[in-house]
Length: 203
Image 1 (cartoon, rainbow, N blue to C red):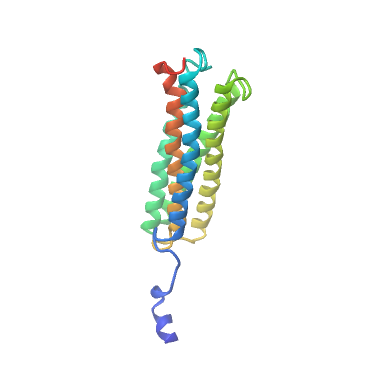
Image 2: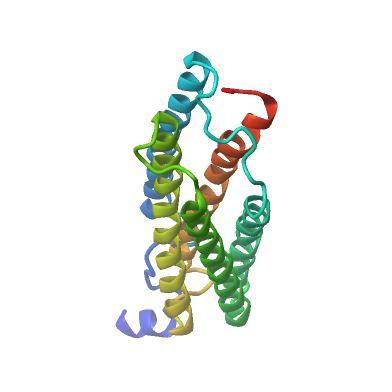
């Protein structure tokens, strides 16, 4: 019996295969709960903007540069993250490393631009309810970006160490799922704080 098992190592248990595992469901639940929190924050903005006196929004014409380029970079990072995951599926370590590396660089650039934007604001956290909501929402998103960068860096190291294969890749899959969530949430944040003022909302 022992000889038969050793002769057919492909039948040995390897943990979750592909995306089939508790890790995938767990991250989906995490994403759902975090999405709810962002939903509450954005609802607070729209509620306050709809009921406040004119002039509630402190930036009637938010600067779209560098906000739009940084948004494009963050969206592009979702595609490079997906490309990295496809590299694991094809057992292409170089593709995976390149995809994760490029995703990390794009995410880090986004974070740097966001911090530069914060420093250039004419208001601070305690200036008004609008300012508090702006810094809370974008700051909460920044926290998720930084966590995502740590995840990307960890996956890069584990990939270089040869930890993943087409069968054992759930860590990469859930990491990429989390990064997609970070990117999608930013679209709602960007639309709320950078685009709706141009439509006259909350002014």
